[in-house]
Length: 468
Image 1 (cartoon, rainbow, N blue to C red):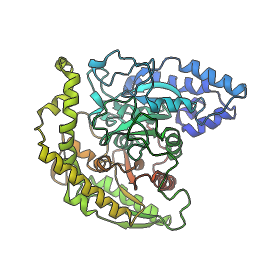
Image 2 (image 1 turned 180 degrees about the horizontal axis):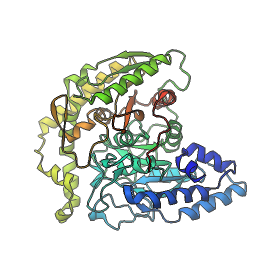
Image 3 (image 1 turned 180 degrees about the vertical axis):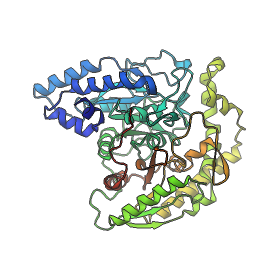
Image 4 (image 1 turned 45 degrees about the vertical axis):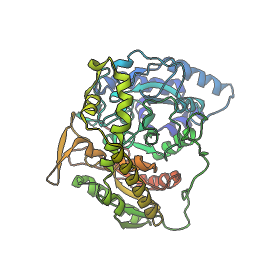
């Protein structure tokens, strides 16, 4: 039963609890036991939440008394350590914030609790949530459950590793360039970066640049992403970007009255991609075509004109560095590698900043043209499968690429705010998960969730777990 529980998705766990086939206490205890057995090798969990078992007992008692049954009644969840959690350490991956305990929950955490979820633990991240690997001076490095010598990604690598290893069924993550989708691809779980502003950033740090930060769920199944999204989305009266009602959706819904139109690409100006990753995207395209979708190989000229990764770098230096300088002043000896690296980058001039913003607008126009013809875009999540720890450079197609090139296929949708989803569809020759990414028009979450649900049934890698 314990093995079944740690590999069940949140939807199934909620049903088992609701029908009395298992108690919330049993579910929470199974995941706590899994953390005790597995986390020493992974270092995905950095803090256990106070009172998880007590909350589970209360959930069981409420159910026995005929109380309201909530969508996540008695189901445990975890949260990246950049989310404020009332009474539970939130240290942001830095000695500068060691011992920090907030008084209130981030909006996303509070909404999960109101839906019946039980906060189980906090998960690891890079310093200040800024890098492609989850490593820092305070809580150390997270390992990938499929291969301990590899990264589980960043910046939500602790979250992805915890879910993949059976330590958590559902989690909260944040994404500035790759941080929800990339880690999910590295560990073979699923994740959703909704349209910018769909889920409030209230109670999450850092906030700069707010127009590019997104909040999204990680999970074991597409239906769990849909469930979590339904709980998390909508205005909170505090985040000025979160103003659109959750019910507003421009997508196809679950039953389109025509074939779904899918375009797929593996380059289109985004740079070289590992051959096995490219082959996995093609396999997913073929699977959708065989399932009745209209599928075409495409290119997007706007991505070939303006390199999104170069634009992102120019914009980040201008906006992020002042915020980091403020919090690290007087604590320079407690700064980790990426924060130090950020200081070495050349300044972005105002002229270059404005030109970069205008280029982002051109990319947004290019996506508008594309999504006028297609419902979804299928492309790689990361340009390579999960990499070795401390990656600085790698070679693709005979070209030397900087480490951040792994995010060249995710960055465009942070710049423009489009929703995008990551899910596993393949396996590398050395046994690592390979994901594919689905993107859609703004506020069309139903479209990518619908297509991902179909693709999930076709995935040759479905229901595979790391042997830990």
